[in-house]
Image 1 (cartoon, rainbow, N blue to C red):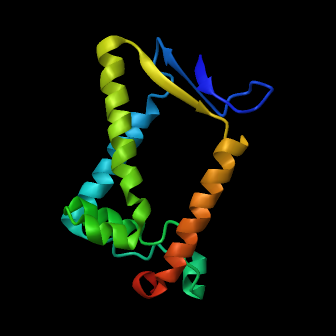
Image 2 (cartoon, rainbow, N blue to C red; image 1 turned 180 degrees about the horizontal axis):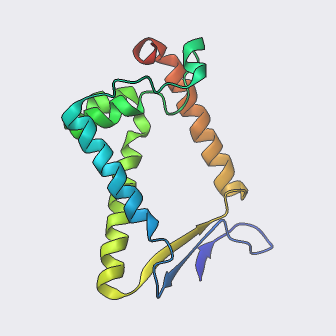
Length: 148
């Protein structure tokens, strides 16, 4: 097992291994479902139903506000508009590519990449919470764009 740590106990914030079997086969199905959803947004447009959370109607924007419109924009190749609606949209194609690469590599070689992240480890939890807070503040600053 490989990983990195800054704690004296040696408990790593993240560890990775090459496994002999795919212990996470649902990842490719999740990516496939997400891809089909993005394709539907590209071809059919935004959903006719309201998918906002309850806080949205009080003027409180969450970190995922604007993500549906951002995904639709990115499927049309309009990266600037996608980033304006939600700058976290770049994580979706990045994660999709990683899962597809992992699946292809695993099927071709029989070696499956696995990462284990300790979410409560300070080296993971603090930057993650900071990123979510910054994104939430950013989305709130764009309430005119994202609001009802």
